[in-house]
Image 1 (cartoon, helix red, strand yellow):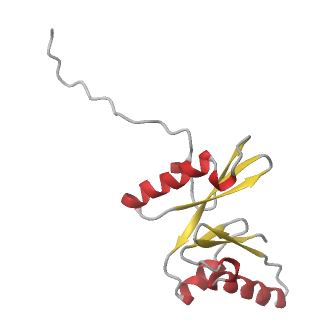
Image 2 (cartoon, helix red, strand yellow):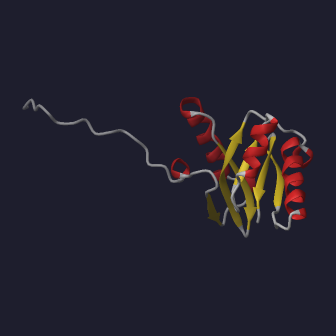
Length: 148
C-alpha cells in the first residue's frame, strides 16, 4: 500500500432531479403526466426543499397547481411584513406574469393583499391602464399574480 498526498476528497452530494435550487421568484416548471396538483410528488418535494433551505438561507416559498394533465410549480415571493406601505409597493412592483405570496393570510381572496391589488387595478383602470391581478388562496396565505 502506498500513502499518497494531495489527493482531494470528492464531494458527496446528491444531484436533485428537481430544479428548485435554480429557480428565481416568478419562475415555474411544468411536470407532465403528474396527478395530484399541490399534493403531487413534485409539489411535496418543493415544500420539503423550501422548508430545508429556509432554515439556512431565509424563507422561500413555492406554489403548485394542476395544469393540462400535469402540475406546474412556481417560486413565489414571500412577504411576512404586511405593513401597508410595503404591501402596496410589493403589489405595484409586480411585473406581468410575476407572483407574490403573502403568508398568514387565511382570508384568501378577501385578504388585505388581495384587496390592495384589486384597489390598484381599479385605480389604474380609471386612469386608462389595463392592469389585471388574480388572487388565489395558497397554503395558509394568498398569492397575487399580475396578469397584465
